[in-house]
Length: 302
Image (cartoon, rainbow, N blue to C red):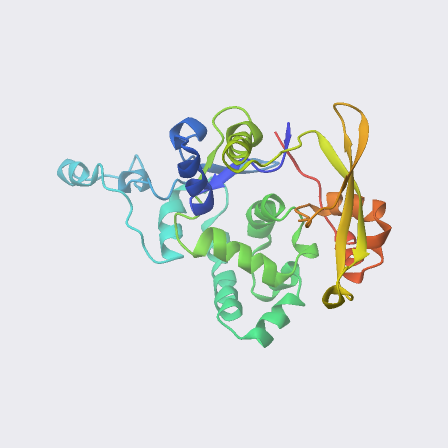
């Protein structure tokens, strides 16, 4: 198992650029873009196609009569990039295994809500932010079957919480990014072998160490961060990091690093909470105490 995400979507230009700068062949790092399947306790509900590679012939039922000449003409043709959400509807229409057409059609209400919300001003978006996603689905008449068997599982995968605990605004922003912004945005590929750390982070760390003299301390955990007042008159009211204490798990030693120039806290909720608890100087500052109180969910991808 590995903590974190191993899926890499089509619209990840920074990852693509990283591979280029590190000299990594993307075909060696990632699998091809693959279908995403949605399951309920009753079995397979729907399959999201690889939008960028879906062929017109994939959308035609095998039992549907079609002239051979026409079939040959469109045999290798890819589904055109139609405006969202029309493109998604066309490409996914034959891939819903169990959800009836009437239930799928109720998704139109969510489209109207998304246009109203994300196309509105800040006041409108604040109104949606105060509403739960569950209330949103009821107001715009999404069917219970569609919500329970498709939308809710999608939110549990994407945001790790059920509709009752999510802001309607956040849900629509998620749907906009992954489904409406561009029809192939949902295309996803995976790390081919090993882990994200082995495939991407380790080559990046090596480059930073060899080319920029960066010292990467793996297997260490930050403990206390101490602060002090600025030394000059201009910095008298400015707090600066003075030292960092960390534990080296390899040597089992506790090390204090002094005369630091600065600290970047690139941490998740649990990590931030641990550092703030160990750092009284940080805990006294409201911005850090609030950050340490943020809710987070531990996720393991297998």
